[in-house]
Image 1 (tube, rainbow, N blue to C red):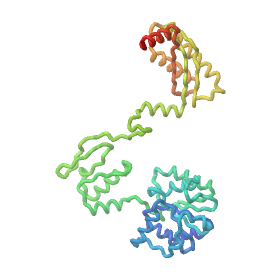
Image 2 (tube, one colour):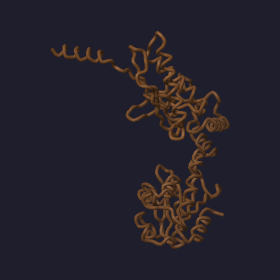
Image 3 (cartoon, rainbow, N blue to C red):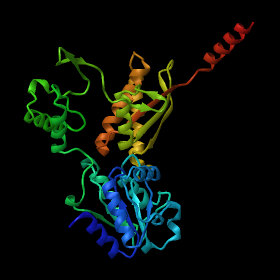
Image 4 (cartoon, helix red, strand yellow):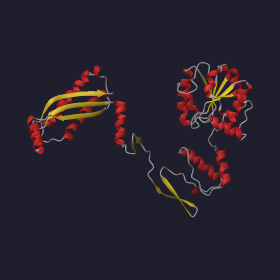
Length: 365
């Protein structure tokens, strides 16, 4: 069955609105959809980005023929017509109409919200990486009361070049050298195989890895080095300044939470002035884990007491000892590794404060 016959049957059989997702550049499918809708006495609304301009240009260049221009309505006019009088053609943004279907299902679309009785027809080929998203969109459409149909692959075409298209271009241009681009490595390799079938020598085909550079010397393609071409992380106002440690900590925070231990000591007297207080966010529910929190606090006190009994003192070492002890304990109890943040504060002695106050007044004089 031809595409126009299939579309005609779907529109004719459905008593509600018919929403068709199609690529804006596929004028053939748009023409067939308009013809079927007009033949059945339905109005057609284009809800894709810049579709008015595309339709106007295509009509002016005779690439699109609209028999009854009164059948074409503005998206804002959709509410004026009954559901059985409408066909909505969604071409989306950036050539991705399927994402706009998700907006309709989530009731975020400016003009169309999926409702009971809606029939959604997807006549565009999603990329392989988009299949999971399509499944979620389809579920949401059904929950909103609509029905979604993906037309059979023999009734739709892809916007991507196939093997015959690539060979056609190679036959026209007859290049001496070829660098396949766009796609995964297996697709680049398949492109290279096609080129060899077209009598391009293997030594003139170069599948470049990320960052690899190529030079042309006397008409021959030669690898000339590697430049830095890694992913650039944008973090707020900073660009490229986020390190792996920060990313690792964020990942741990999102999965296992944070555990904070606060304790106050006297460095001069080498003793604990205020025993530890422990807090947590995203790690355990405190009200049901009081024993765990109490034991963790006691462990911090014991660890600090043991460290202060020694001769050496270093702020980084005392925090490290708390972090190590808590990390081992919490993993044994929960099999989880939260970010542990030890906070060790020093209690100032009265004489120390007096010295600072006297020195400050002396400097003023």
